[in-house]
Image (cartoon, rainbow, N blue to C red):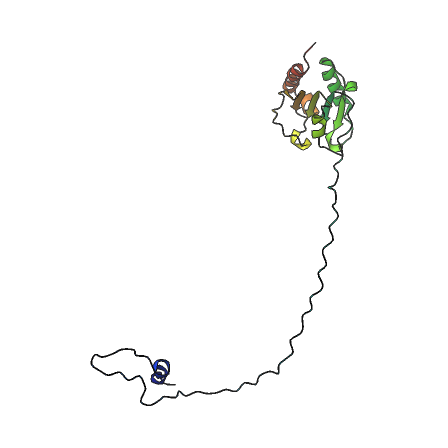
Length: 199
């Protein structure tokens, strides 16, 4: 189709521009029939639309409430002094470490026999929050075990005893490190004297 014929089809009854003094005739002199090519398409046979059947509404049965997995309890304590060590390779302390700890405790009026000594690496339940909330102990000394591992949010500088809600806390280096270092032994002795004043 020529561009003139296309414009004629598109704008045949529209006035695109007007010259003053000229009479406008809106009916064209000769209708222009554009050349069209008709392509016959074979229409596909109409297919029946499948009927959609909705299943009946069945309310969901309530899901059984499952209890959160139980966290093992912190071991039962028998004394007012709790001492925590961390020996991943053996459950019990070495003889030399046990002797050193007992001597240190005896120097401040206590002993290993009247203290609960636990190895952190072998605790089934390391969460000590209930121990403190129930006030089961009066003294809590950790040798190389950060309090965060026990789920206790307590900022405690090493070798600086601190009393919180009636419980004395002391964080120190592991026993073998203290035993081998004279300065750390002095720091430990000074801290323990603050925790256990002579009566």
